[in-house]
Image 1 (cartoon, one colour):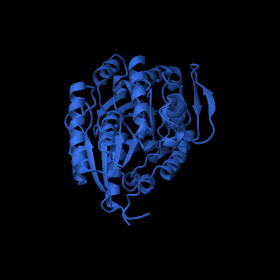
Image 2 (cartoon, helix red, strand yellow):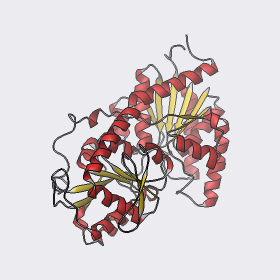
Image 3 (tube, rainbow, N blue to C red):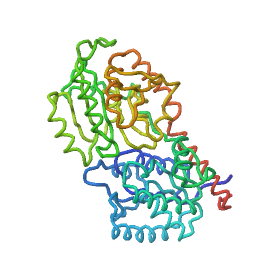
Image 4 (cartoon, rainbow, N blue to C red):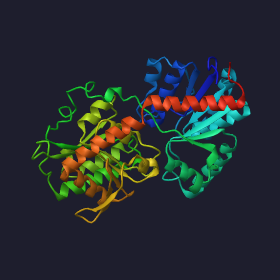
Length: 421
């Protein structure tokens, strides 16, 4: 369709905190630059209680522009300042493509792009803020804003079919023809067994090779509901000791590790300290060696109230680990095979798939029962890990993601007639 040399791409994201959207934006900025696009990343500042990935942008020598007033918190004064700063920088940059990520950056960026008549305007929904974040009135306001923004957006990118159906049918953001499904993609090279250090984290966490470790990986924020993980693990600890494991770790103990940070860190520590098994909980903060983290865990647990496509589950699968996850957002699109409904000893129900287990949101008994199922069926858990690993590596590669976005850009540029020959 033509050469992309000289085609400018402005990518806007509110902040580069550790998580899926930042990984996505950084990866695309780097890889598309290698394919000939002139890319610039416009971003705000990371909160004090969040892990920061800005160092990766510097390390990879990605062109970026920092807008200090662009941040997570809603502030009329700062948001207006951020808009005018972003507008001014985009006016000087004169992009051919404006691609926004996350809600606030998506709103400010697309308004600026529309006023500046940027030829191609694209927004990616990594999740949404229409459930689990705000009250009814504020949610309705955000829905109206997103519906209006969709009118002058060329393409709305979603991460899964379930997410698209939710935005089209439930929230009526835009008609289906406006959407394009582009799943996430990651560089899994560090997850190769030969790349992972043999010195895993168990020693640092004061855990033994026989211990069965459940791991929560993510922001310690209300929307991620980490308290459900803690309560479910406490319930499991009260009911039983771990059964002999198929890999020889008989008589090992249970452990729960929380990897990440956020506003709930203090209250979660207090909740853990009230429990008599405090030593079996580990809060280790943000970690850079995620391949090492996942290699140490026996199972990954996700308890979110709302998700797009959770990075923790994809990375956990890539490392060959089974998982327990709440049935929210695009999580169901990560499940392999047909489900089997199982009832736990305490009456809680959960759905067992070939690669992991789904529980309903807020279901304490179901979540605790699912954890117990994994330690009671170690061979089944190992098979889940093998199936999940093949699924993740086959469907969520970085090359596939970059190919998908590259083709989207070429298609939209072709429609506008601005590709060079």
